[in-house]
Length: 364
Image (cartoon, rainbow, N blue to C red; front, side, top):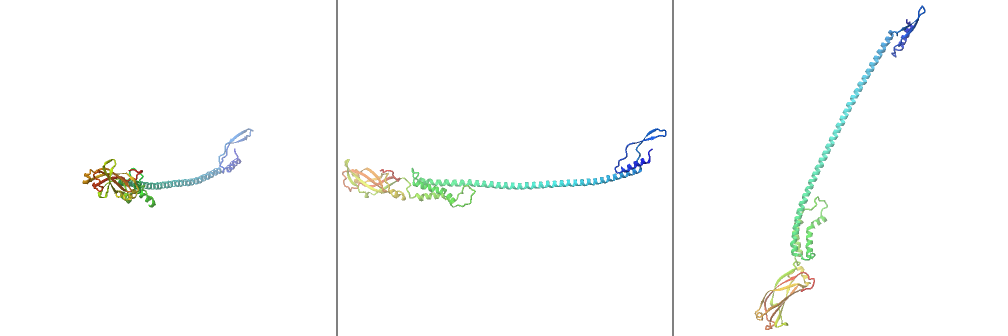
């Protein structure tokens, strides 16, 4: 049988283990000696807890429950705060992300709008430049057409000048050079004046437009050519006819050495050729010698005495020197008309032609 000390030991252990909450363990064995001397072993199970142990256990359980409730409350509050914090952080993260995405969209939209405006402005500027360049090119083509037309008119105006005053066979003759220089002046003179005295402001056009100079150049070229060469000799061969007064011709009669039955009469007349050439060419023409010239009788009328004396033409020779043509007419008559003062001719008209080009060698 267990004694009180045993119970007290159990209770003391229970009290000691209240805080730890560990119950007693194991089975106790007791040895009992009977009066007859026998010894028996008694096995005593673990005693039931006492009321004090149960009270302590209850207090422990209540304390543990309060602690657990407090811990659960604290953990619940912490979980609530954590959930609120997570919710707030999540909402703040979402709001921040949404704000950032909205700001990013706004920036993208603003940049795209600015880029669109810049592209539209650049497109309009490019279209304006292209259209302006097209207008410039069309105007340049029109200017080229007008200048080409008036340049052709100017060149055509030089054709009659070269035909009238040009020196054929002498491409570097003074007349040809003068006409060429005049044409060149009227052809590019406006460009030279513009380059020397024009404005320094650059022009978008590659070609200057026609102006008063272009319109007046053809007429001015004609007037300049006429003014420069109008008094010059511009025809190489000059022809004409001259009526020679018979009373100014005093023949010398002489026998023909080859035919004693003929009497030769030489009529000499001078024709001033300076009136047949240009006034500015007279002084140069007077210096020419052995000028090629040909003369022929255009019309001749013999007198009755000449007809009776069987007058006939032997030769007609023309020589040009110092601007004067000397015509020598030789008429043969019978020896019966020996009187030197006998008038054989009643009228004489001579046609002539001569070369105005300076002869290279003396020819007759």
